[in-house]
Image 1 (cartoon, rainbow, N blue to C red):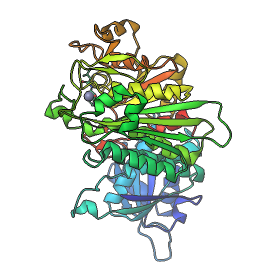
Image 2 (image 1 turned 180 degrees about the vertical axis):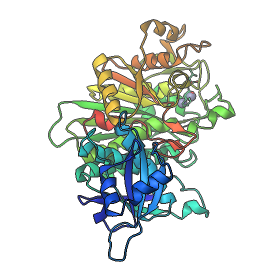
Image 3 (image 1 turned 45 degrees about the vertical axis):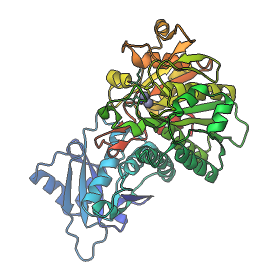
Image 4 (image 1 turned 30 degrees about the vertical axis):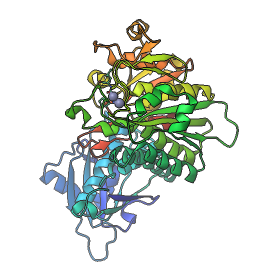
Length: 492
Ligand code: BES
Ligand code: ZN
Ligand code: ZN
């Protein structure tokens, strides 16, 4: 859907559109709802009673207001159930925003106004922000490759938010647009979004928004000594790219934050081949990169006070006569040698070199996002990312940013004793602990932490980055997970 949000200072019935959305909290009309009810001969409360409308979260009821000829304002009210007020959070409003745009569009309205569901629980700004963000995320659709059919008839919807905060709605627009940009990148099929194409889009976006852009091709990657990254990439006919974007604030920053994203445009597993089933979602293996690039897009517009550098080692994990194999020894940029025990544990190899590079370029702290392990999905499921930190303070900063953003993360331990499992007889390290599948998310995190002494927080987003079902804030596919956390983290 093509959604335009408009912030208005006016009241719901002062906006000349056909539909007004009104909240119902715990079975009771909101204040704004009661005001309209009184204006319209109690038609709202009477209908609610007659139809036993309780207003469970997401339940809706469309009521014609029966306007007389001289009456202005919306001719229909859509009662929108918000559930009980006790226990409601900003996430409730975010989900409400998403649900209500879908509902309004489904009903066929092209223009509507919604109240901002203000209550004593939250301020006008945060309520406006959450509702607008939810609406813009919920309005996202992916139909680029559908020909004919209903999907190509793009529905347009203009939604007014009555009595909302303009600046909050503006910020929500920038943030949601960045999340949806990340979703587009993840949803793009891997034959289109090759490493070179990902780099081209990152470069185009960066240059357009005034970021510094530097992109290395396969020769420069090899030349730089990124042997671990290059090892993964060498099996594909689509050459790798190393993407670097830099945002510098106007006043010299006190802190440089590096954001690293896993950028496997497709992961077959390589010679340690994934099952057909296991490959189905593997176009999502660049979701970390998408999150980082999406965040940079909003950072360029919101201009926070810190310097932010983004790094993506983009490659494709394929099989061919030139592909890396099990038992190969790769020399990483840091100089450490790595014995490959499993070509499907490729993410950590590409990330090792990206993290080393970020460290050497002068990062004060590194946050890294990757669809790194199936083990993390087993541990925390599809809704929660694993958080690993070698520095408790930096870990907490990221965790708190995620909480503010409304993205779910949970800390897992970096148990030093498990590092033993990554010692190799042949090289300095091996990329997996061989046959054991115990603590796979933790050993992956320990591996990454071998490549920097700087504060490093690793988010394993293998679960929440991608979904095969529609979810509360959007359709099946890439979720854009991580963008909002990164923006909170850098204070954008
Ligand atoms: N990209 C996968 C991890 C993944 C799995 C992401 C499911 C999203 C959903 C990663 O490269 C991988 O294959 N990891 C292996 C590591 C193992 C070989 C140690 C895994 O998780 O099985
Ligand atoms: Zn893999
Ligand atoms: Zn992977």
